[in-house]
Amino acid sequence: MDEKSRAIPFLVLGLRVNASSRRITNSSEEKYLNKKILIINTGGTLSAVMKGNGLIPGLSVNDMQAELKMVSGDIDLEIEDFCSLDSANIFPEDWSAMAKKISGCKASYDGIVVIHGTDTLAYTSSMLSFMLRNIGIPVVLTGSQLSITNPVADAMENCRCAIHMAASGIPGVFVAFNRKVMLGCRASKVRSMSFDAFESINYPYIAKISSLGMQIEKSAVPERTGIFKLSDTYSKEVCMIKMFPGIHRSLIEAIADKGYKGLYIEAYGIGGMPFLKHDFIGTLEKVIRGGMAVVVGTQCRYEGTKMDVYETGRRALAIGAMEAHDMTGEAALTKLMWILGMTEDLNEVRDYYEINMAGEMAPVK
Image 1 (cartoon, rainbow, N blue to C red):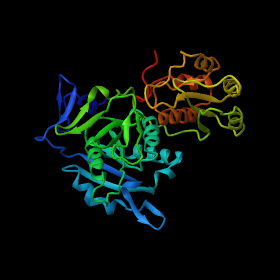
Image 2 (image 1 turned 60 degrees about the vertical axis):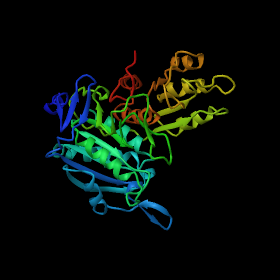
Image 3 (image 1 turned 135 degrees about the vertical axis):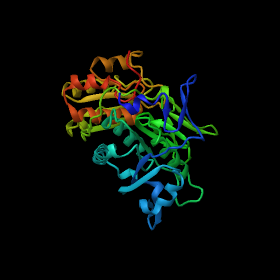
Image 4 (image 1 turned 45 degrees about the horizontal axis):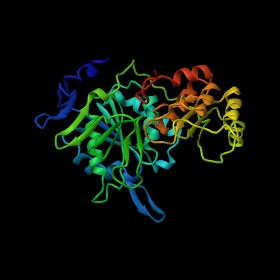
C-alpha cells in the first residue's frame, strides 16, 4: 500500500475520521488545500444543447468552466475535452482510450472526474474498474439528467459531489450522482428521468452528502490488492441476451455461428433457464464445448443468482456455465469482455471470473 493510502484512516484532505463509525466526515474548518483535479469531458446530457434534431452534446469545457469552478471551492481544477458524445455512442474502444488517458496522466493529479452521459455510464464505470484496477487515486464518473445550462439542473450538485470525492484521497473508480457516491462496478441506472437515477446494487454507498457534509464509509471501500498496471485489452466478441418465455435455442446457435467468444445471459430469478420443449441448456452445452464462455446472471436488480438451488440452475452449472452471483448486469458483461481480452482459455476464464477483482461481487464461498 502506498503512503497516500496508508494516510487514509487518519486524515484525508480535510476529512476527519470518526473512529467509532469508521466514517470520514467533511470538516468546515479544514479545506482541500493544494489539491489538483483533472476534469475530463466526454459529453452527455450535462453538456447538451438543443439542436434541430433534439438535445445533443455541444458544450465544451470552456463553456462550462465558470460553473465547474464555482462548485470546486479551493480545489485547483484543470479541465479538458476528451470527446463530445451522447453516451449511447460510447463504445468499448472509447473505454480503452479513457483508461489509457487516465493511466497516462494520473501521476500529475490528486484525482480525476469524468463527465459522461448517463445511459451507458454504469458500463463505462464498470469497465474502468477492471482496466484501472488498483489505481492509487480517485477516478469519479458523473453526469446529469438536465444540461448544466438549465437553471434547475442537477448538473452542478453532481459535479460538486464528484469533484470533492476526487479530492478525498480515497483510491478507486466511483460514480457520483444525486449526492451519493457508488463503487463504479456496483452502480446501475435504475430510473430514466428522475434526478435519483443511479443506485448502488447489492453494496453499500461509498459516501453520502447531507447537512453533516460528505460522509465516506471507509469500510465499504475495497482494499487495493496490488500495484496498479493498466489493463485496457478487451474482447468485442461478447454478446448479451435476456431470457423470455418462448426464446428458442436457435438464437444461441446463431450467436455461436457469428464467432462470438462470450455470452452473458440475464436468466430468470436466481438463474433459471428452460431445458424442456426448447432445450436451451442443451444448446448451451454444445457452444460451451465449442469454446464459448457463458455467464448466467439474473433479470432481478437485487440479490443476485444462486444457481445451486433449482434443477434448472444446477443443470447449467453442470455443463460449465459460470455464475454472475450478485454482480450488476453492467459489471458481469464488462468483466467477461475484459477477461476474454486477456485469455480465451475457458479454464483460465472461469478462474478469473470467480475472483472478486474490484469489489464487483461478494467473495465466492
